[in-house]
Image (cartoon, rainbow, N blue to C red):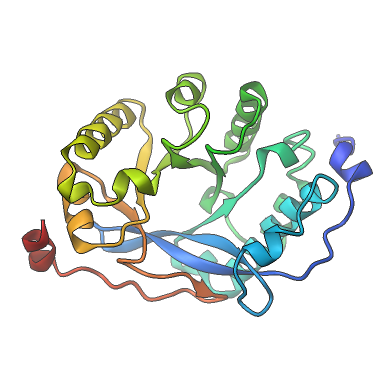
Length: 257
């Protein structure tokens, strides 16, 4: 049975501004493999994200969100992610999703068209976007039922924090980079992150250390039990390409810690 069109399909404006994507790896440091590539919005000539996001408003937010999903899957397929085993992580706007199962049709069609496995698509939303918790819970539940993975970006910097995890559990959380910065020299941050890691282990939620910029930060977090990392210390985003990973030398990382 087909799902009726929702408000965004009926009433929203299109998104006509051209854009593309850059990709940044999320690596499994223990396995020395790429777990996923995050798709990041860029202008058509590699301009920064603001050149595109500044054109998004209430009237075209739905169309922009849909276009980003399709573009990310299309480029990921062209770059070989469907063959190499990595996931693609796509940022989405919960407030642009009116009815989860209706608003996912373009994503499913793109995945089928490019033969991209649904269980290798991660949808991440930022905790800093204020959204109704019941609505967000319905989205996460529907996406999990379909086979997608879900992630919370910038965890620790937003509106809901631990309250969000008490109501529903995503597959991953990405620690806000403010918790990561200089963690090797900040015992308070280490205590907070250690508590989050213990909690997430109990809840079967994987943790990504996001925004890692130094070998010392990476070594400290690895010693604390983090295995998934993202940041300039490993690779900067590459426009319409998969950047090589600067894998750390184990002995150098240990010395930096």
